[in-house]
Image (tube, rainbow, N blue to C red):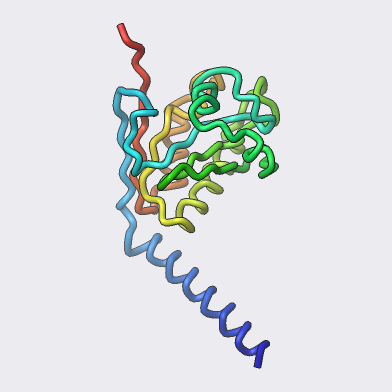
Length: 176
């Protein structure tokens, strides 16, 4: 009896996964929204989860990572997740998530497009599992990390293009 119930639960889970995959591929295709605005990422509405790139050492000593460390802290909680390059570490902040895209082994290193894609894919899966459909990001990987924005934005389209998600890119404009 127990084995039959477990098998039925496994089959139901597989059916629901296939249904979600089908809906993403055919029914909801084209619902991906992408926009860029000038502004401060930390002023994004609380309805939007946030993401940025970090090294696996989670030093966060330069660029926008410094601000994430100041605002959200919890570096020990992030380290306990033991995310390596190509993975994602996650913090919960009230009703939204803060995603730390681990795109390189050390903070002083440089990411690759492959490690960024892998981190984005893991973030996408977490977002889908947690019904997150709004994300605010900087031009990830393009500041100190030196990736090219045209390639990164194409990667975002590739990873999220069939999802029902809104991504807002905040281009920081310093006060004058």
